[in-house]
Image (cartoon, rainbow, N blue to C red):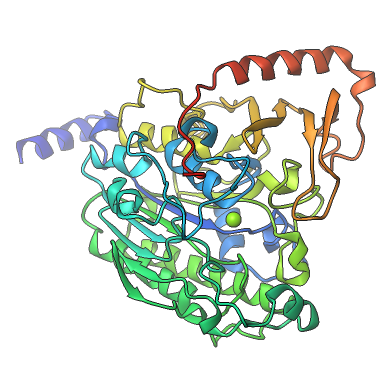
Length: 464
Ligand code: MG
């Protein structure tokens, strides 16, 4: 009581309340699966309606150069939660690019997640949705700092049963196709126990939203972190009855419009509970669109290629930060990455940033709060299959290896002399200007070599 009185006296005397005495902010991360850079109306899609995300972007910050740590699910998720490139945690492999239901590995216990760090300040933590960092008990969210988990522990197309139509062929014939529920036997876990198998995927998106809202309401009195990782729009696509057939973009559009409605429900919950001004909400995706699935895959818009590749379409994601009254509305073109969330959240929550390991994330809090104009991130590293394929430094991107993915796009090519693009002037990576800028090529080669030197060998988790 005396403490409150003292604070009131200080406040009345014109002193601002020291930041460490302000309520610790809540964090909500909404993470999609395989959403393309151009799949939201506010990122340029002409026929998908996303009014909630458009509102979030206009009230918050729309980041146009925001990256993931890898162009496929498992390593990208490891990067977000640990603030480290997945090559450092053994969560990236040349042989198996993601974890499968028969995998024996997962995110090592030695890694520190955002949830574990926030727990040190008493945060309530929940993981809802797709995990894909190991389905065995020792790797599940409840072993990595989350108080609870509810969702499919890997991709929604895993545990496929033979004898059903080939999804890609069926979807090509019928743009509104969705698979029979029995075709995919992926389970829903509550903490470590299977509570539904096969998961009813028609209702999955709404149920993930409902679980998130339930968690927010239950924890409105204390600081919380909720990691909502939707399984969709990864194929097979499913939408709830209310949304099915409603988007002129087809079932892919239906899926996005349902997710958008969920975002709206979550924002409204925060507003109704008077939590909006103390909650940072981040929306982004794990990797680019799965292009071979044609209309069942998304669009990277003017960015080249998609999921699986280290061209921009594989690793640059539509990203929005929303925190009314704290994060001033703007379009941010400077660099950011999902790996930056860990140090950013730590900083905002007053948690010391771990010093006993190499972090690849940067603290974006000062930029988000308008206390600086410059992003601390100046580089992006594009790893694939345990090799550094490309590097971005400022506007310059050098490709050492180029490769399309999933049988489309350019064949694998190792470049003795790297390709060079200026992404500010040529975001589509169309015009290789290496010959015009040999000095820039040399500089980026040196930075890449130093970066590779910083990687220490660890046990690979994906090939266990
Ligand atoms: Mg994905």
